Image (cartoon, rainbow, N blue to C red):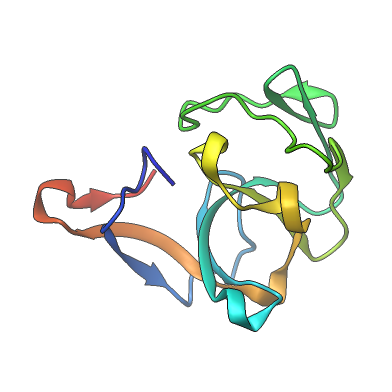
Length: 135
């Protein structure tokens, strides 16, 4: 999740964030991978239920419109041997890491079911010099 989060950063996750409202584009969420041995991941939501995602020319397009992503540290490309387009089904979210050149995310495992989302990361706690809200 570099540059938003770096190695060794510790974050506070609000596990009640989505009780009254669904996740929003741009939220950094903690979710459980569908394969239990993979553990939990922190990634950014880029596409919502019902949206079409297309990775083209280093950019993310949502329903044909380029997504403005100030947080991404590198261009977004589909890894070799993976699709470059997805449809996000009802109750699903498409998530990407901010460090697009080195991120295991929806480009590899597809959209994440809403039930896998554990909460919203909102505050960096550690190290002290990085303390602050996650945008």
